[in-house]
Structure formats: structure tokens, C-alpha cells
Image (cartoon, rainbow, N blue to C red):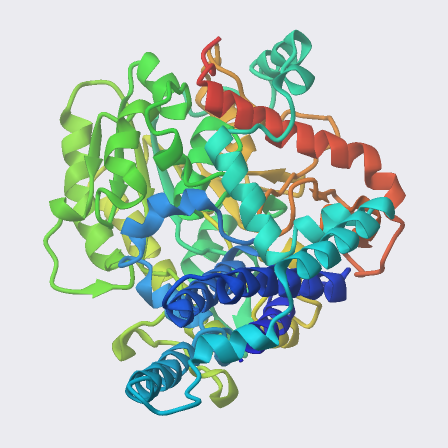
Length: 612
């Protein structure tokens, strides 16, 4: 019974993770491996075979559940490296509830009943074995029904050799449950690089990266010099809400007003550059112009590395740099990692007085109203300007706000949905941002500051079918990954007449060089992967590394989505404007460039040789 139930789960699992190519051989491969393990158990001379079989069945079921849930969030399977993230589970509990559905729960819901069923059989056997003729233990029944291990192993080898001979073995190993985790474990233990270092890490590569530090003098260069810099990283702020009305109701009126101000530049073709830590990786990419780690949260994997990003650059030019976040100081290892990022003080949840927590931390209202006092303290540290990096938390998934904060009238069909909840949550965040800007004016911190606001990452996942349908309906256009990963960036410099909407393609790795040029300081240390969005005439690309596979590319006109199975010919490309599918061959060269960029950044992090 256990092998059959597990095979059914593999069928469900491949459906959940959207296996598009080689689904049957992948299910067959998983089935043969599980049958092989069951066969070894039942054909052995060990005692308590049923217990061993149940342990294997339960362990595989639990890992299938974890993989399916993780895939729903990150569109990839789990890695051994996430063991380090277990301490964060309590914080993300509400988000996990949103990801779980009946299909995913089906992978584990039967385990308690199966255990009880087999336990009853075992008890019955114990009673019968005292003298009832013909009594048979469950393991003997199961064992008589399972093929010999050698026969199953032979069938498995034939399957592997056949798909290797037709060039499809990568497709299977990248998606099949057992082989994926075996390869992942091997890479983790041996610290394998994605490619050999000698192939990606050459002198010419390093010189090219160093060359990106040479920022061109031009548009906006030095316009913010010797001014304070206040950066707001807004939780789950997607670009679609900008200037968007939900059935006649303006969702972000304060941000819209800021964008229309004569002193604001708005970048509407700007994308997230996150890894597996979302918010933390967004701030890492933005401040360092490096791709976040793919092996785990960057602050946890490489928190002790030597960096030279925006905080250090400004400190070297006389600034005092503080970080602000309304969450637990140890979440994503920020308390330790911020030191090497260049922040001299971290104002965390412990430094605020509050009575209510919404989602991941204190309310944005408390965060902003009390941060003003810390900003005034920061301003008094010395006569030099300051850098305040501020991260909001209230508009975090699952976007569940107390009823008194449900200001917008959500249509009945959207109430309780992720989209409906998000619209009210981001409207609340917008309201608090408006109040914060007014507080800056009131306290005399506004006129001499450059105020920057951007979204950290997506809010509404494409992988949630209900949300995708609603988004397509309210936006009146297909909702896909390019729309999902598009976040806004706006730079506000009071008193300057610079209002413009910049349509040039960019991402969070371009933030550091863009701000360095605006603040008027040369980057003379470290390596960066981004470019100044205001003075770069080269063709721009965005290289996502999560949600769609590494090697995918977003251009001004199109999006190339690398196939999850690792086979280039299985990939897809379409025009962003019309969603019309186009030939993937034109992306072959830039696809390789995307992989090399991400791999090189990954290697630099691992070697901790940023400051060459």
C-alpha cells in the first residue's frame, strides 16, 4: 500500500510544481527509486520492517510538502542550505498559511492515518503471534508484493541511460524529487561552484567590473552632494499600483503626488533583483550592486564578508549611516550583517514603543512617527550629512490588516482574496508615507535631504491562479512575471526642477551607481554589476535569478524565460507589450551573459574578494 500511495503523491507533486517536459519519466524515476528503497526494506532480514517503511514514507511525504510549499513562493525546490533559515519560520508563519492549499496538504494529510493503520496491524500481529496459526505480519505481506531490488535497479538504470542518450537527463535531474535533492546535497557538502572558477573568473572580467565604477558626469551628477539621504524601501510595493484606481478609488494618492512633484524623477521600468530572502536581498542588491546569493539569504551566508556599498561610500565622504527596520533585529541576521554593510547603528523593533504588531513587525504608523525622533538624533551627531536607510514592514504578505485600516471599498468578489487585501494594505502604507514626508517638513529635515522610495519585491504572485485571474481582470491585460517583478523607484530632491519619468530598463543592482552619481561621489573601491540609470546609453538588460530561472532575460521589448528543466530549447520568449510568443534563438547569447553575470557575482561572494 505504501509504494502505491507514494506514487500517487509523486503525480500530485509534479502537477503542483508545473512539470511541463518529461513528466511521465520523472514520475517513473521517482516511483522506481521509492520502490527500490521499499524493496530493500521489505526484502531485508531486519526486524521492524514496517516501522522503517513508515519512517521512509513519512519523511518523503514531509519533504514533498516542504518542496511544494517552497515552490509556491520561490518557483524552485528547497535546498539543504535553508536549514539555516529554520529560525525564521515563526516570523513567516502567516505567509506560509497563504501558500498552503488542499492540493499541497494532500501530500501529508494521510500520514497520521497510515501510521495508525499499520500500527493496528502490528498490534494484531503481536497478539496473533502468540499462538494463532497462519498469522502474517504486514512486512511479510508487503515484502511478498515488492519486486527484488536488483530488478528495480536495472529498470532505473535503463531509464537513466535512455534519457541521457537523447539529451534529456538534465531535464529529469533538475525536476525529479530524489535526484534533485541528491545533487543539491552533493553540491552543498562539496561546495561545488556552478562552473569552474577558471572559466568565469578572469582578469578581463575583473577589469570590466572595475570599469563600471567609472561613472559618467552628466545628468543629475552631484545634485544631491552634501545633502542627507533618506531611502525608504517599501514592503511589497509593486509598480502597478502607481497612478492606479481600483474602481474609481486612488490606491496610492500620496506616492502619486510625490511622483508628480517638480522635484521627483520616477523610474517605471525598474525591477527587483532579489534572491531567496526577498526583502533582505532587495536591500543588499540595492546598496551593493551585487546579485544576492542563490544558496541562501545573503546576510546569513555572507554576513561577515567585506563589502563596499553605498553606506561605506557615504561614510568615507563624511556621512553617518544608520539603518531602520520595524522587525526583530536578528531577522535575516541583520543585526550582525549591517555592521559589515557599513551601518553604524541599527534602529530595530527593540527601539520602538508600540502596542500592536501587524504581520512582520510594528505598524508603519508607529515606525515612521517614532523614527522622526531618531532622525533628529542622527542629524545632531555631527555637522555632516547622514544616510538613513529605512525598511517598512506592514504591507507584507498575507496583507491582513485590522478592519479599521480597510479604507478602500473592496468589491465583494475580491474580499478576502490576496489582491483585495493587498490593495488596502498598500493604501495604508501610502498613507503613512505621506504623513512621514509631512513630518520631515515639520521637523526641518525635508529641504536638505534627498528622499528616495522604491519597492523591495513583488506582492501578488503569478503562481497563485486566483490572484492571476483577478490581476488580469483589474489591469485589463495579462499578468505575468515581467509585471510581477516590476517595482517603482522614485528620487525626490526638494527644490530642484527635475520632474521626469525615466523609462530606461533597470533593476535594483543599478541603484548604488545611480545614487553615487546623484550624490556626487566616485566609487573607487570594490566591484559593481549595475550601471547609472541616468547616464548610461548602453542597451540595458535585467537578469532575474529567482521566480524565473537564472539565465532568463528581460529586455526593453521582450522577456525570455529559461526553462526550469535547464534545457534552452524548452524555454519561451514573448513580447512584453503584446504577449506574442517570439523565437528564443535571438536570446541565446544574452542568456549566456546572464548566467555568467550571476555566477561571477556568486563566486565573488564565496571568495570574499570584493575589495580587490
